[in-house]
Image (cartoon, rainbow, N blue to C red):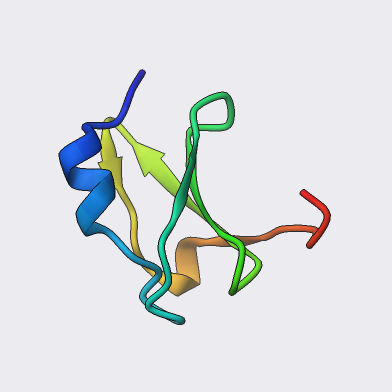
Length: 59
């Protein structure tokens, strides 16, 4: 599944307001600044900090 580039350009991390990186293999939007990965469920990004998973800073 791919994410619409137009949408990706407009989304940002709700915690840090920084750009997100799309990890297609994991189906997540990654905020390097916050150390969080936001899931994409059924093609819809879930931009809730409570739903994000912590990531290793080296990821």
